[in-house]
Amino acid sequence: MKLYVGNLPYKASEQEIKKYFESVGEVNSAKIITDKYKTRSKGFGFIEMSSEEAAKKAIKKLNGTQFMGRNIVVSEAKPKNVN
Image (tube, rainbow, N blue to C red; front, side):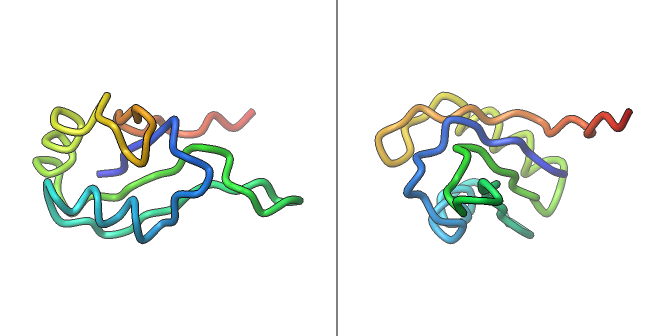
């Protein structure tokens, strides 16, 4: 199950965010979205948890928690609208 993670610190790495989420369950992948021109973080990313149970636990335990000095937002990722 894929999760949206918002309000990430710009200096956070994919390894750091993956390790943070591994505290609640197995993580399949972590991706921080970057600006394609500046290669700087846009302050959000996606975590793919190994199961729906682990994802729900991550939302419950990590949403609103402080990660590297910022309160992160964790929610279920919504499908991208393609028009």
